[in-house]
Length: 310
Ligand SMILES: [Zn+2]
Image 1 (tube, rainbow, N blue to C red):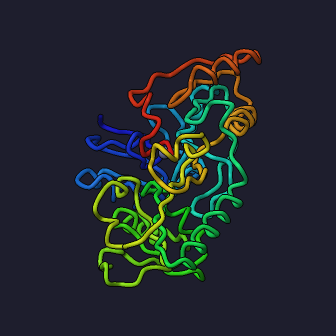
Image 2: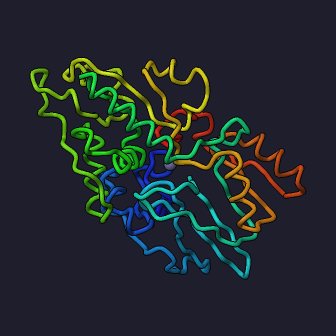
């Protein structure tokens, strides 16, 4: 593809092989890090700046999902479409907040588009994480906290209380965290954990690592430990057991069911394309309220537990 407009740098929204990528400039560093060999094609555009592409007026607006995440607004002959990408409305100090944008057609994600998904106060979840870490530290065991390397990990780090102990990172998390710092996001100090050995005393430490580190030998170096996974999926009974961790924290970078519907209403859109997740229940709910809602197929449908579905 010669040119792609990118909402954010998660793997199901940013794929290698395009000649050019246009995305919000604050997220360009993260995108380059993820693209590797294709990074030279990345071009950043400031939020709110318009660009004419083949007669279509394009602009990028914050989506509140991860650093640089955007909704893309497209205007042609007075008709306005907005493509949400992934988005959330809960506060997140590591990225710009979601903005409602008036439009005729809104293309929304539906990752957590079921009525069972209702987030607890996200600050209360961060408080629970710090309480868990503090209790582990006082008991002399290392805390292993799993979250997706891009976005979730930095939001977790921003919410951790460094007075409890040192914050260590897995390499995948440290690389992305460095990109966040270079983009100007303030985060507490972290230490890349590769140098840690079994002999070292990390009992007061928390280790932030991607979920894939859970099943590897990488975590053994920390000795006695407790593990937890931070994800919206932890809202559902049984998810923690399937992940084989001691605790699950329902911290999500997506809208829950009520937030999804209030966000859609805030756009004023009459036509809503639903993609990426539980499209059926969301479409039925919208149609019952007289809106023109339809499904947009994605090649990533069904991948509810992948990196993007945090
Ligand atoms: Zn995403």
